Structure formats: C-alpha cells, structure tokens
Image (tube, rainbow, N blue to C red; front, side, top):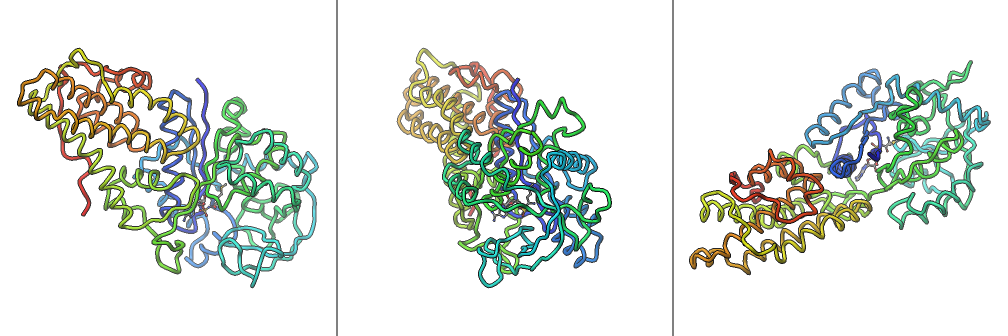
Length: 505
Ligand code: MSP
C-alpha cells in the first residue's frame, strides 16, 4: 500500500481559530479522506506553534505563563477540529518533548554540516509575523505583509548558511516543477531565490520562550520558524523511529496559506538539504479569505468564528461552501448572502431535492422497495457517473477541490434533468414498466454521489447511504464499486428521512 503523508501549518496559539485556519484543515482533511478511500496508507498531521516572542507577549498580557496560554488555546483548536470532523492521525505541539528532540537532532546535523555560524543581526523584525524584514522592502517602518509596526533588532546571534543553497534550490524547482503549487506561484519564489539569499538569523536572545539553542554555553533560544518547520519530520518519526520516518518522509504535500510560502519552499528545503534529507514533494499554497471584501482583522472586528457559521448551516454545508466557493489557490470572500446562495442552490435545491424526490417516488410507487433495473442500462446517468472516477481523481491530485465538486454536481444536475425528461409521474399513471428503470437509475446515481462526496461531507454521505438502505453493505461503498454501474440490488429497503439540507432563509 502506498503511503500518503499530508500536513497543515501549525497554528499560533496567541489567538483562537477563525475561518482562515479552518479552511486549511478542511482542505487537508478532504484530501486525507479521499486518499484513504483510494486505499492509500494516509498519515495526516496538524498541530500548534507554541513558542516565540509573539506568544510570550500575548501570555504576559493575559497574565498567564506562556505554557498555560498554550494549554488553553490548544483546546480551542482541537475542539474545532473535532466539530469539523478533521480526521488527523497526529496532533503535534511544538512544546512537546518529541518535537524538541527532533529539533535538537536536526540542528545537530545542520551544525555538523558546517552550516551554522556566529554573526550579528541588525535589522527589522515583524513580531506578529515572526519574520525578519529586509530594509529595502519597507516603507514607514510597517510590515509589508501584515501592515503592523516593525521592531529594530540588533543582536549577536547564530546564523544558518541559507545562501549556500541557492543553486540547489533552483535546481530542485527546475527538476520538480510540481514542488511549488499552484503553478503561478512558482515564478515568485524562483525570482526571490535568483536575486540572492541572505543567511538566516536562527537564534534570539532578548526573550526566553523558545527551545534553547542546543549548543553548550548558549543562553539563546531558537528562532521560532526555524524550529516550527521541523515539526514536519519530528511528527513522523525523526529522530526516534527511523523506520517509520523512512516510510513516511518525504511528505507528499504540505498544505499552507500563500503568506508562508517562502518559509516552506526556500528555508525548509534548504535546512533539509543541509541535513542530508530529502525535501517535501509538494507545497501547495492556498489563497486568503476576506470578509465582505475586507481583510479579516481584530481591529476591524470582522473575524468570522467558524462555530457560529456551523451553528447556522451545519458542518457539512460549511465544509462544502469553503471548498466549492473558491478555486483552491485563489483568494476568496466570505459573505452571508454568498454563503446562503451557495448552500440553497447546490445543497438544498440540487442535491437535497434530488434525494427527496427519488426516495419519495420509490416510497409512493414501490412501497419503499427498490425495483429492478429492467432490461435497459443506465443511459445518460451511467455515462456521467462512470466518467467521474478518473475525472475526480485528476482534480483531487491537483488539489482542485472546487473542480471535483463541480464534476460531481454534473451528475446531480443530470439526474434532476433526467427526472424532468422521463416524467416518472406520467409513467406511473400509464403503468409503464419504464418506471422501474428510471427510478433504479436515479437511486444508483445517488449511490455514486454519496460515495464521491464522502471525503467532503462525510456525515451527509452516510445519511444518504442510510436512506438508500446500503449503509451496512460495505461492498457497495468501495472505490472499486464506482467503476461499475448497476450494483444496487433490487429489493433494497429505502428509508427516507428528514431533508438533508433544509433551505436557509
Ligand atoms: N505558525 C505559523 C505556521 C508554522 S508552520 C510550520 C503560522 N501560523 S498562523 O496561525 O498565523 O497561520 C496559519 C495558517 O492560517 C497560514 O497558512 C495562514 O495562511 C492561514 N490563514 C490565516 N489567515 C487566513 C485567512 N484570512 N484566509 C486563509 N488562510 C489564512 O503562520
């Protein structure tokens, strides 16, 4: 069985989760579930980034020791992931012993490679982004990324010899064009690396909340990014379970937001090159969500709490909206009218009505027992359904979640259209034997739809399978079963339930 190792960024514990954070985890979870369904041995990790000056300051303001703040906030993340059905296999916290051990081991390798040296850092730093900023990139002492005030740092520190890896990085981008995704982001990174890299200051001395630099006599802590990136290997066996590590590494995909692409495609692979380890296979940067056209921020007070939206529309509709509304990679806008429009049209009207109409007719005309397919094959529905397996796979491999859903909805819409074309109510009146074929084909289409949507909306998928009466028949829920039309056995007992997606007013 092939492995598939998928990661999300580690979220800072200075703040509670918002829709932007949930976006990455819903996407990663959907991919993980899809790959599991395809038979991959999936390892999916997420977690929290708990060190650094930003967390230390937030803790001070809250009157708590930083570890207590982290212990509190981490529960908010875990709670949201549970509610969103995020099926992670491991949750990594950067304050855990396992992570610290991995960090020390990787540092040791980089040190032994001669890539760490003592120097002096003098320059700007953005604490909210935990990023060093080159003077040439700023105006008015504001961070070019978040717009907040910068601080001037002047301290002795250790450096990582990042510039040494310029040509190796450029070679890697060239030989593995899939490494930086979406494609349109690659050139941005190539340009940065081609223009020359500065060595990276990796230790800090003016605060304490971090992993101590593993060098004797040093009282500094490691730069939080240098340390946090290492989670991707400390979380999968480095350096305590080499067999496991060799099985899982390199990661198949790091899913991240576009703002942290440089860390993942320049600094991280260079650290791995230095340590003699392979770089990840792919880094995919998604876009950012705005709210009603504006950047989400605490000061504007337009933070969207995922729990509120889930209370309003339900978990699966929320997941669907995030992945369907915006092509993965592009920026998107969250608005109440947009949310309601999308859910009412795709979920309540298209899918909800389809299920309801089909099951109502089987109930009415066949006393809830699935009729036989008759002697016709599935016609237009079969054709659309059997194409899905390859087309959806291609879309999912490219992380084009919106496209995969669009393809699945072609079947949903085709099935609704098929009802209009075949007019089952008229066939019933005429007592035509055609009626059983039509209803059989519609029920079989719903089986395909339920299985294809399961990585996106697992609870709704189960509800549809239950209503179709096949929740317990596992052989009708495998990927292989999606390559064959007509597997639903005649005589199944349908159990129509409540509407799966009530309209939102
Ligand atoms: N701790 C670092 C990541 C370290 S990974 C080794 C970090 N944390 S973060 O909490 O600030 O951000 C985590 C992720 O949330 C990032 O991928 C970021 O892009 C994403 N988002 C934060 N706000 C967002 C939106 N408004 N929209 C979409 N994603 C956003 O960076």
